[in-house]
Image (cartoon, rainbow, N blue to C red; front, side, top):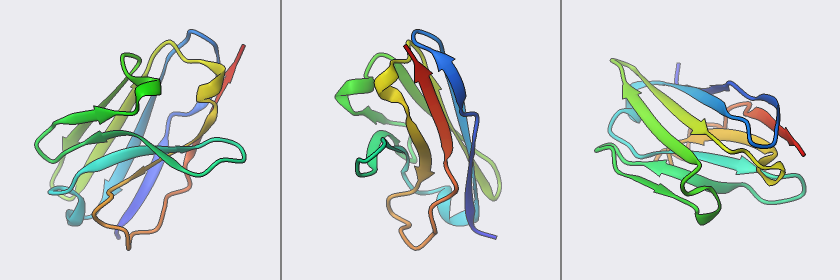
Length: 117
């Protein structure tokens, strides 16, 4: 079954860290770029980190130097991770993983990250 399932969110204090994980099940993901998106309350979903199939990474300015995206390609599943350090209250959002090149796969449930000041 082709699906995206995120995990690892939680409630932390500002300055602390979290590591998010995503299991992207299905062979369609292995050769595709993968990204972490987030949706802040009342805002549109935004791409915050991207990793290509070759392992190149790119980040939105607001998370550069604090977040690190990585991936592990297994036989029929891509495991995507987002290491988030020095978290800020403005990082509070629901975080989703997705392959931008495979839009037909439904969004996963996401994982809530809440950073208290």
